[in-house]
Image (cartoon, rainbow, N blue to C red; front, side, top):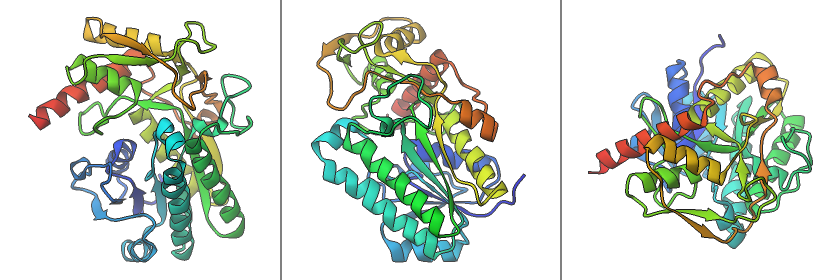
Amino acid sequence: MSARFPVLVTGGAGYIGSHAVLALIDAGWPVVVLDDLSTGFRWAVPEAATFIEGDVADQPLVEALIAREGVRAIIHFAGSIIVPESVADPLKYYQNNTVKSRALIESAVRGGVPHFIFSSTAATYGIPAAVPIREDAATVPINPYGMSKLMVEAMLRDVAAAHPLAFCALRYFNVAGADPQRRSGQSTAGATHLIKVAVEAATGARDSVAVFGTDFATPDGTGVRDYIHVSDLAAAHLCALDALVANPAESHILNCGYGRGFSVLEVLDAVDRVVGRPIPRRIEGRRAGDPDALVADSAAIRARFGWRPRRDDLDTIVADALAWESELRRRRA
């Protein structure tokens, strides 16, 4: 077990970030959360974490925070994540994801932080030539979201070559589900993630679920994605942190997925199974920037970090998401 030093988590009041914070605290890491609460929630940060409201690009704030708290690792989640929005408003994504990440990386270098974990995405691959996708596949993003993240990966590679900072960029596939203990989950109003939308429909928050496109080059014509449980993804960040601490000279770029894809219709069938009744569906046109299929080859993270998912089951992911949706409705009542 590596020594436990303070870890700065940006975006730690958001969906994935809050689960990573819970996993870090459960494992005994001191945690400092920096979040501007533009999309996150203060209640999602547990009392055991130190919370600072602020912007990752506020370099005087971040550098003072690093020095004051003795931060030795940064896990960077803060950013914008909606693919269609990135197509409509690319400058927002290059500002929030790329420009602000550059400022944060510079603050890390100035503060002597040796370990940096970055929330990247399978969108860096664009339309893959082969599925499942290996990490050495071509990175040709087809939307500004993917490009904004790929540019940060490039910055991290260059900075790691020039400074004593090693990084791990984790390329997420489709994240879903919620903390099995119902401490956190996807809570953003107007979320676009399929499973979130479907469980909202199941609990009456929406009247139906949209199926965006039925003409993809897939067996049933709907887009295929690799859905990973958010708790398994959070565990991957702890594996990455342990690996960076154990070998501070080695950086990593790794996929986070299960290696199995499900189509939109297969996911909705799973929701119907878990709920016990059909959820109304409506067919709409394809969204800009959506590839046919994104499925991870996850052999590298399993071999390199010994990462072993514990909730690798679509019905389990849906059930946890549904339980959180019910919990969220209870809290808002």
